[in-house]
Each structure stands twice: as structure tokens, then as C-alpha cells.
Length: 439
Image (cartoon, rainbow, N blue to C red):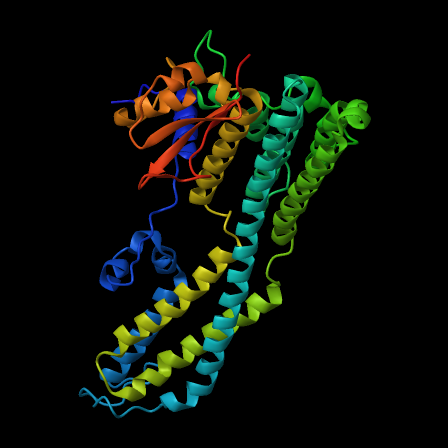
């Protein structure tokens, strides 16, 4: 039966699945190593099993082993009509001969893995730094620009759009494509997140509005600005903030907040540039090339040298050795370019969605403010905490009339505060919510 899902709906479903992607739960514990060993589907083992060299060198050794077992030389010339003993063959190579080259291969592979892990941690710290800078921008502007909601959103949306462009370029760059935004990345910037996911409802204002409009995209795609979206968007963000802070800087001292905001935007630039610079400067190809050459030469020598062991288990040993070394190389390659898989693309999409949801909440909504909550709008997952929460949010007259177990309502110099009672004494400075006395 042919599927009735339309292409557009299929695209929306793919996007919705992407933003819900989560990093696989920690698969290992110190007291359950066997359980960790069985979690092969989230390891590099599937990638290692798909490599040609694993099967080629295993079959090469197995073929030579069978030839030796039946008394044939490498040129397939028959030595005897009867099966030859395993320890008699025209060409032999002792395992001790390849011990030096195999040791060098192991050391080089370990060093390569260490370098790639260093690149991975750099990517991780840069991504966390970008997210932290965005949150600082949103928090600073949400408080210091409370009277200018439109300008506050401009500052935050430009900064958020700049971070989103980095991830759009990185996903293409990691797949050996041009470092530019594709149509899908532009669409995500131009519409609300709900519309991009296909979950927007008619007549309902989106919680995550569009980050750019048509005019701004036209400017960013112009010949002068193309390829510089990351820097231009940050300059727009700083310009929008400066237009708010500068006129009142002398009277209200708001320029100090602009300095903090400027520092956060520049740190956003620094972390974003670190990601693209690392991807544009991959592990040097000669380094990787000589590593692969050394591995293949050693695998070839192993294929012959293992015949000197006079054991029927050497084909299995050959498979395991090639598999382990190939898996270590695949692990290093995955660490050097963590954005190059479909799973990574889903995780990046989920991370962008999470940042967009948080920044939109801080910059577009007033729900984070305490006065935005009323007794009828309080929601909690702990029903038993509702009376306490409502009382703590109540104004002084109502709060004074409520009895809370473990709390005492204290009026000091016209200020009413809830203070927890501990062993007959007040625990000062802990869990206190203070209200200004109303006239």
C-alpha cells in the first residue's frame, strides 16, 4: 500500500524528530563493564565493520592459511599430492620480525587519537561558550531594556541568528560542502520555529518568532555581505543595543551594561570562529596518510607472519587485530569531525531548538518576572507545595494572614518577609522573599 504522507509532511516529521534528538544515555558504569560491552550500536563498532580492510586482510590471511594447509606455494604450484603439515611451507615470516613496526603503529595511532580528542573538546567548549554567551545577552537585555521590548528582541534575535548561521555552515562544511547556508537553514531563520516544524496553529502567536525578515535576508545575501552573515548579525546586535543605551548613558549609567553586553557578543564571535576555524583546518592529510600506510603494511605483514604460529585460530586473531586497530582509527576520525554524521545533524538541530526556545522566552516574554504570576496562574508539579508557593507570592496583607508550617512572617522596618523556623530560631538569609511595604 502506497504511503499517504505528503512530502511536506514528511519533511516536517523529520524536523520534529530532529529537534527531539537526545544524546544516548551514558552507556557505561564502573560496576557493569559487561553491560557496557554490549552497547555496540552506539559505539564505533558498526563503522569499523563496514571498512574494506577488515574483511580484505582477514580473507587474505585465511586464503594463505588454506594454501599452506594444502601444501601450495603463493604461486599456487603444488608441492605434494598429500596435505602438508602446518609447519612446512616454502615462505615463512616470524611474528617477531613485525614487532617493531607494529609497536610504532600502535604508538602513532594512540597519539593520533589524543590529538583528535583534543579537537573534540575544543568543539565542545566552543559550543557551550556560544550557548552561554547567548544566555548572558538575553538576561542582560531582559532586565536593562525592560522598557524597550522591540529593541531588546532585536539585540537577542540578531545574536541568536548569528549562532544559528554558524551551525548551518558547519553542517555543510563537515560534509565537504561549501560553508554557506542552504535553503532549509534560511527558511528556519525566516519563519517562526513552530512554522518551521509544522506545528504552528492559526490565530496563536508563536512562542519562538522569526529571527530575520525579507529585507534583512536580502542585505545578508547581497554581493557585499554574502559569506559574512555571522559578523554582520553581531554588528547589528551591538548597534541595536547602542541605540538604546547611548542616549541615556550619562543620566542612568546604562553604558556600563553596554560594555558587558559587548563583551558577551564578542565572546560569541570568538567561540563561533573557533568552530569554523577548526573545521577548515582539519588533521593534516600527510599525517593521516602515513598512518593508514603504516596500518596497511602491518596488516599485510601480519597476514603472512601469523602463518608461522602453526595455529588454526590465526584467522580469528587476524580479524580481531584488524578490527581493533580500525575501530581506534574510526573513533579518532569521528572525534576530529563530530558534525559529519546524520546523528550529529539531529543533535545540532535539537541544540539550536533548545537555545531558540530559551532565548525567545527571556527576550519576548515577561513570564520570567515575579509580578507576572498571580494566584490563579501558579502551576506546579507538586500539589502539596501550592499553598506555600501562593502564600510566598502573595502581597503582605494576604501573606500575613496565611499560616505556613516551618515559616514565620516577620515585619522588620516596614518590610515583610517569610523566614524559615529552625529549632525555635530563625534561619536568616535562607529562603527569604522580601516585599516592599505598600502605602
